[in-house]
Length: 385
Figure 1: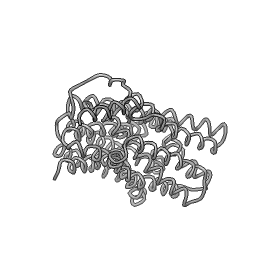
Figure 2: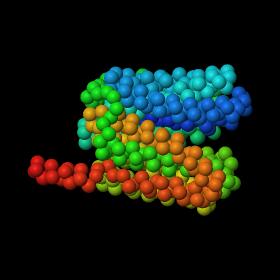
Figure 3: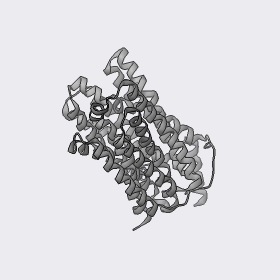
Figure 4: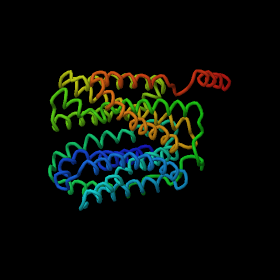
């Protein structure tokens, strides 16, 4: 088996389990968990805030540890953290312990991505790195798409579900130890990344995209409930469509190689901007579900674009390059969610949806390469030829 296929398959599965099971499955089982353990508003707030904080701390720590310990050790650690967290959820006797376990499980998402970027840089030939990275990143959507049917198939058995998820994570820890290289995939660096032009523009673009995405990630269920009268089944179907659409994000590397980062960036920001009103305006069942699939494809494709952008901006520090974009997306989501809520409360859902579609388009103002950088690149190519 080629390194690209071996690392790609392992990374895809690891990302799917960490995101789809360790992080997002909790929301699907929340009504059952609440019915048994009686979660109150304070514990729910602790879980929400703690999940974000855990992700941010974990992804920064992962980038640092990957540069020091290597891809294999950190990826195995991510799978073990997911297993421990999900086992804790399955065995939790009280709301507080449950909250702690959810935060631990969710932090595995931050740990998992940087070592995969380093593994790809270390062992995959350069021409296949972008494709391999974006295929791995598409595991997010596979996990989201799988978690919905699993939740429906074992309704009422949330402890059994999380116990099984923990077992799968343990298997992936073994697979990561066998399949991934120990190398760091770059120079042993440290500290903050250089704030050069591509990195600054990456931060701006990913922040705005992250903020725009909260229109559906945070409020999509509420919007379809209010505008369409959909209950949990309809919302679950929307989420499945988002997950299935996002699997196409694995093509980001291929599209970037053919059309360039900026063209792919602009195209999928446009699709995200279109998908937000398709879901948020309540135009009917078919447009809403199609909008969900388009949103999923656009979101995962754009995270793939920022992954490639970051690893190209910091080629000697691929784990840190990935971390910059993904961390900034999360910060943008943290800022975007309360802003959407304020606009929604003050002006209504229609203006809020329109405003956030505009924010998605605004992210397109930031290019992966400036005009001067592209000119220098062409001059270098001419000199070499």
